Length: 381
Length: 137
Image (cartoon, chains in turn green, yellow):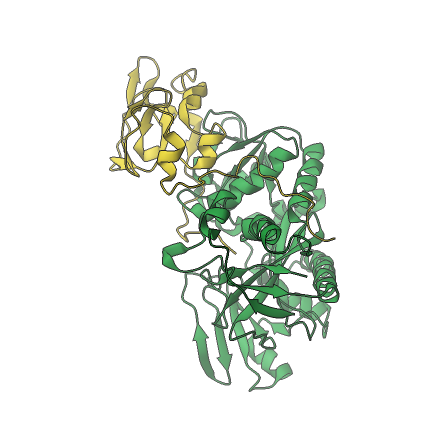
């Protein structure tokens, strides 16, 4: 695994905008960064692929453990949601995608930082933009990236199970989210399913019929949401989720996998696993295992883009990100071994589509905490 | 090979190619479409309808249009009283909404056939209220 500096394509902004990556330079800061790429060998890609597949299976087992042992409170999942989450699990409601974040340097096993299993983003970059970049830069090279065709195939399966139109939506006035939703809708459209757009704010709640409706008051039976379950359960319409009148993608059971409270449970079930970092629900438990000076990362059970994440060394907090998260509590994860390339710290996002690892997107930062302004850098092998 | 054989975009590709002003691009085929990012409430554009600024979308009837027996039309529904909002202008719908029928005159829908009172059981805005900004994770 190497980081190689190159000259960007002279017309790269137009190139990436043409394929939907309109948010390449938010607030004047580089986000899509093709001034470098990461080069892997086939064995390294195989390692990442296996880690993704193994950990997805382990997360499924850990979710079953949460259900069997009734650990929902430990994960901060609202009691109201539990029966319906269990129903979703028992029905095996269809899951389309998710993304693991790994620390990986090509020399030591990938270490799981978290599983973005409910509302993963950076999808247009990983599935489309870096694929088109490769066509221009090194057409004959390979890339760990069959995300697009796997998404199309997944929607075909979804359509066989859940007939009818699928509505797609996220929040309004957020270009990155809109483009992500539009791209996922595109893959569904290419699978031959009927689609339509409906912002999450525009979902109608029909109390008489106990169903959701669109802006034409027609039933919404299938809805792809780029919007977290934990927020929906705290909003005015949360009562209507109990009607179970709509197939949501991602399904409700993904609340278990997207919760960082799963990290201590994974460590409890699979202690010492090469792809896991020690993780606990208290700092004391962690430092008992790792030593008082080993350092750790304090993470909210529910958070996004590195918000409210702190790095602690000894008794000192050496880095922290602001944010609005942490109400449900925190978990404590051992510091990952440092992956550094020319002063950049890459995080390898391995995409899971329909329960199968099928792609890689790399975000890097000079900070130790990957945030919403970390840069996306393409890769090849 | 571990890469997709082909990545084809049908809905999301070439959406704004060579154009910085997304609205101007999307609506350039509609004569009389106003310039600027925001559109004033109740602006009428042939082919799109009336713009309801609080709802960021186009509808077949004017904002708070009164229809006897139904009520006041706003955002695709009728209500017994005119809708009051401080939003005098706003940005029109996203490319996704426009291209897939979420916006524009398609909102005629059942609002016109929904008898006053029948739509009272439908409310909106109960999701999407948590202000954390972009969802990215």
